[in-house]
Amino acid sequence: MTTAPADLLPSTERALIHRLAVAQSEGRLPSLVAAVVREGRIVWTGSRTSVEGHGPDADVQYRIGSITKTFTAVLVMRLRDEGLLDLEDPLEKHLPGTGVGEVTIAQLLSHSAGLAAETPAPWWERSSAALRPELSDVLGENPLLHPVGRLHHYSNPGYTLLGSLVAAVRGVSWEEALQSEILDPLGLTRTSCRPVAPHAGGWAVHPWADALLPEPSEDLGIMAPAGQLWSTAADLCRFAAFLAVGDDRVLSAASVREMRTPSAPPEAGDWHSGYGLGLQVTRQGDRRTLTGHTGSLPGFVAGLWISVEDGVGAVALANSTTGAAATIAADLIRIVVDAEPKLPAPWRPLSEVDPALLELTGPWYWGTYSYGLRLNSDGSVALEPLRGPGRAAKFEARTDGSWIGLDGYYQGEILRAVRRPDGSVSHLDLGSFVFTREPYGPAEAVPGGVDPEGWRGV
View 1 (cartoon, rainbow, N blue to C red):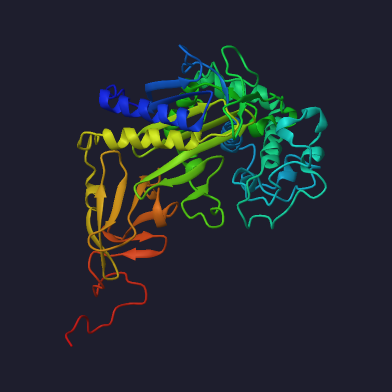
View 2 (view 1 turned 60 degrees about the horizontal axis):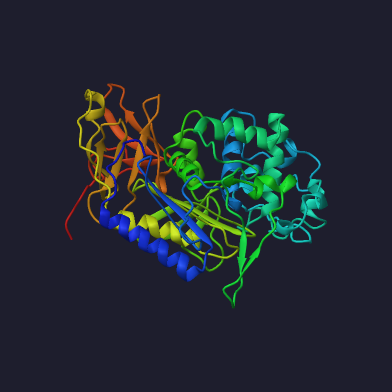
């Protein structure tokens, strides 16, 4: 998301407005605001409200609930990238005395630590944080409900622990770290831990009558890292753009890509969604992967999704206890992408050609499977089957002359060109798989050797 695209077509804007109007009317939402970001730029905002002659704009704050967790995850990933912790470290190493110190930081980020979904009673979202001043009050007497690392089970106490971890390692409060490490660098001036006018009020809508009831707005105290934040559609679009491509002032492109990669299995019975490191991952039909997060607190619902491949993200915020904000945001992406598919980047040649790399391009064989190796203008290489199904992957260049897999079966695997003593290329090694220039050629470095009689007829 780096180039400035053209504005949306009028027909696309009309479709977005229609989707918003239907959602507000049928969902009986007191107000609804949404925005679309494309290639890093906000290209559309819209709103609908029950107040005659007035509509919130993209600068009005709403409570965003569990989208806060993604901000907390970014803070943890920053600590990892600075070498202050490892994701496989047990929590006890950095935050002793919790009683669940055997769980790892990665398991907490991916909701696979086996912790309970909620705190002990009373319902924490509608009660005073003064009832839970310590982590022991958040975790309760039996915090582990499932085997550690075996199951994805969403946990609000888990992200409370991560917020306390950030404070312990940084030596400042979670809120201070959030402000200096994310909000200030990204220019999210309308995102805060407490509401700042103009902001929406939270409402419950009666299920059987067109009547409203104000919802309380509790400060979450120690549980703030799980769901405290207030934000705007415009700020969340900027945050979505960051989650798509990274920002070296906050977190690198490689680290946000790691966050977007599923690391926990889906919920039982749901094979179209998973969870990365602080980000939900879901499929929209058969064509599109969305990453982002949903959020809710009494009086508010929120949804933020991005389609990295399409360069489009969307945010929807409503001030109602119930509502389909996440579905609305996903639909806005679908409308834009279907109406205005992303234009491919112009083809450009390499800035200079390295003969040693050019020599590696062309057909290779893994056994009898034929593959083609292509050198891209950005220095990456793509290895793709030439016919039929196979394991295609893109590889990023490393400083030692090898490449590391970026996706698919070979993600994280190392691709190397193995050379003979005279400097000529013998074969490609990919995670111990050997790719040769001929299929089982007699002179090729095929593990186990090749029958000396060679190929034959029946």
